[in-house]
Amino acid sequence: MLFCRSSTANMNPLPINWLLSLTLVFVVSEAGLLLHKTDVLIYNDLDGGTDLTLHCKSKNNDLGIQHLAYRNNFEFNFRPSFLGNTLIYCTMQWNGTMRWFDIYVEGRDVSRIRCLLYVRPDGPFLYNYEICYHWKSVA
Image (tube, rainbow, N blue to C red):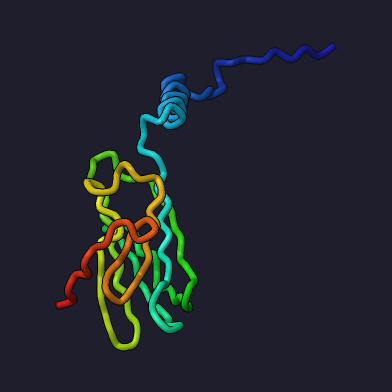
C-alpha cells in the first residue's frame, strides 16, 4: 500500500505581507480614503450645427482626438492624484478657430464628482451655464 504525505515545506504560499497590503488597499479605496472618480462630459453647444474637434490630455494620458457633431458629447472618467496635481486640458477647433481650456484643475475642481462642460464660441460653461470661463489663447 502506498501512502502519500503532503509537505508544506516545498510549497510557496503567498507572503502574508502581500495579502495584508492587498486587503489594506481594498479597504482604503472602498472607505473613500482614495479620491473619488470624476466623470467629465464635454458637450458641443456651438452655434448653427457646427462640428467640434477636441483633443484632451493630461501629463500622463492622451485621450485622443474626438470629433463631435453639434449637440453630441465626449465623456471620460479618472481618479484625481492624491498628490493634488491633476490637470487635464483640451484644445478645441471649429470653423478655423482654435481655443484651449483646462477642463480639470484639481485645486479648482477636486470637490466635483461630475464636470459638465458646454463648449460655446464665447467660452466654456460649466454646469448648466452657471459658471463661465474664458478661453485660453493659443500661442
